[in-house]
Image 1 (tube, rainbow, N blue to C red):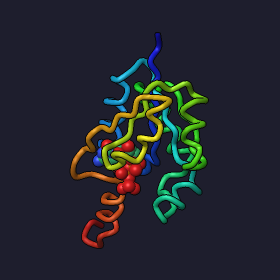
Image 2 (cartoon, rainbow, N blue to C red):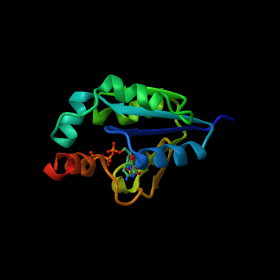
Image 3 (tube, rainbow, N blue to C red):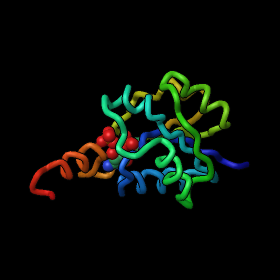
Image 4 (cartoon, protein in one colour):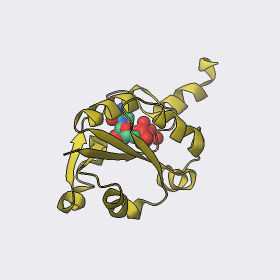
Length: 134
Ligand code: CTP
C-alpha cells in the first residue's frame, strides 16, 4: 500500500526550516503532497503579501526531490476536502500548529513535527529590512 503524506504552508522565502519539515514529512510515507497557500490566502493568514509569488513558491516546492505533487491551497476551510481529494493517509504540520488540526484525525493520522529553531520567513524579512544589513 502506498502511504500518502500531505502538508500545507506558505513556504515564502524558502529556508532550511522548510527543507527540514518537507524531508521529515517525506520519510513518513511514500508520496509527499504539498498544498501551497495562494497569494490571497497568505495575505489573509499573515497580514502581508508574500515576497515570492504563488507561482514561484509552487515551482520551488515542486523542484524538491522529496515532493511528488503540489497544489494551490485557496482556502483554509477546505483542508478536509483537500485531504480527501488527494487520498492522504497522514497530515503533517510543524508543531507551531499543534492541536489545530486534530479534527482531521477521523480521516487521516495527524502528526506535528518539531519546528527547526531560530528560523522563519518573518525573521528573515525582518533581518533584511534592517538598514545595517545593506
Ligand atoms: N516550519 C518549520 N520550521 C521552521 C519554520 C517553518 O518546521 N523554522 C514549518 C511550519 O511549521 C509549517 C511549514 O514549515 O509546517 C511552512 O511554514 P511557513 O508558515 O510557510 O513558514 P514560516 O517560516 O513559519 O513562515 P512565517 O514566519 O511567515 O510564519
